[in-house]
Length: 278
Image 1 (cartoon, helix red, strand yellow):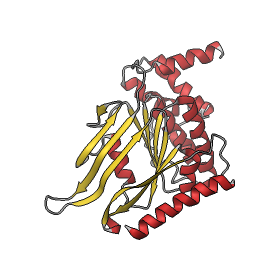
Image 2 (cartoon, one colour):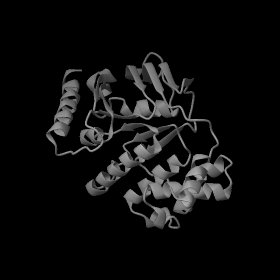
Image 3 (cartoon, helix red, strand yellow):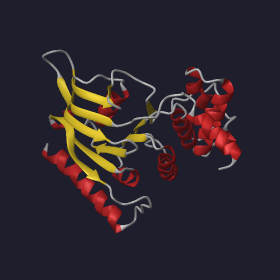
Image 4 (cartoon, rainbow, N blue to C red):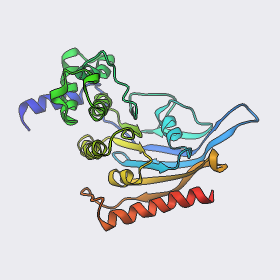
């Protein structure tokens, strides 16, 4: 590694001056109900899931099965009705810097440059301007946007803005990265490019990722395991985990291969059968 790269990486890693990250996720007996007492609708019930440190887990299922609800509870944006959620052994009681969230909506500050958007989090945590800039430049390089650092979000394509959103979250050095349909609004070519980028970033950054998507192919391409959820209010039963499917396809995954499509078909069958028989 060149000296300049070492300096940038060191500055980026030290932005928040936290101890070594721990990112095991433990979800046990989770349920979520909405509505007034006596008139509640149970959106999700008895969800139990463990995610290992550094693992990439995708969650798929039909609309209304509780995928995004589960992610919002993990993020601390919503509280469960029953059950426990632990990250690194600590209960999730609200949003925290140990968890970064990327939504389909980029949520960038239009009045700040790309670099300033990425540096915003470290600056809010007390990191000096120079070190925050170095950290921002490091993560912009990671997502391939070094040449766009001085531009404003409105000057970028949708795919480039989503790269900025990912870099901004990574600059906060979260142990857990929560992603809710982050590529859903992008065209097919840009989506494929960002899927490849995300796999590369995951290998380089080693964060734990929980990724919600409607695309089974995307889930199989990205994840170590795919959590299949079924149910939901539209089906008359609460959302729940139907099955967890390991994806043992290695790092060089070919979506056109027989092995890839066999896993994809199995997950599609689980989603469709679950919707038909709940």
